[in-house]
Image (tube, rainbow, N blue to C red; front, side, top):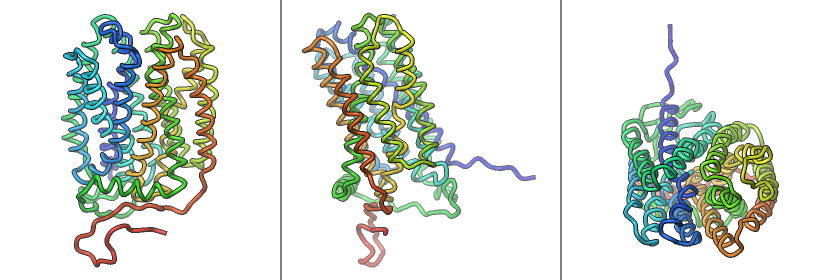
Length: 435
């Protein structure tokens, strides 16, 4: 009698999911700390939002270099160091007395740490370990961030209310540290290291040799991808995606609801509910990505998101009405459902360089998020409410739908990865093009 052995790819995916959840604790923190920090230090909301913007910007800009560093030093080392940076950045905030220290801790340290475990990490894991079910696994891992938000946000809101914001910051630091031993123990690099094919493959593919120059590889991939129309359409749409999720809703939904009389714990619970439905929506999006044209999926996701943001200002109230709950459910299903089709399109257009190129596309996502986080804070400071920010975001999301539908079907691997071959004929060195 034979028994089917669990493929190690699923263990790697599970550990990656837990690591993403551990890092996601900080992603939930800014929205529940804006008002406590403002109340204690009297810093303007725009100043606190600027620290969040630095975090979001570095979160995105680190991603393509992290993908290249994972090729050079291994996933395990990069993720372990990233979790330590998140723990240090969150823990050190309890000692800060000036706004520049907030930028250093929230912005720089946590931005670098979370950026090293951003969606380029997801693309690297799925690209190495999965051939079959790749879209589905991409959706599940992407939902790890939402799961982290779901787990931490209500807890953090209660901790801030009952014990102060410093306790909440220390809980996030402890959660990130707790994941490090699991990563070191179980996160494997390549299926070939175990003498196995990737899940769904029939042959063992040798692990590529480690190459130096991670920065050069990341910048080289950007230089090649930037020559293509597809890159700019994907990057433009994903910049708007970041502006309308992490930058605006993720950072400012709780204070905006509080402006209309809603308790912060209630608003935090609603944002956590977004995370719950995001898990469902992102996993479903991964399943659809394996079956439906990714261009059509992106167009639909962005258009629906834009429409929902345009009606949001009329839904805010001191109590949670049915209309707001409908918005939360709908928006949650669409929150990062854009990720699986975007990863698939990067792989389709840019071949084996897809993970690194997606890192740059994700950098545009975080650039949009950073601009939106600061811009919405300025709108609130100058106009006294967030209404204009919601309307602009809704219009931009509808524009992103148009960008996605302009993408054309192309042959695979426009920009393959640069491969350094040390013992091959000269003609085989450097950039290799397929098709």
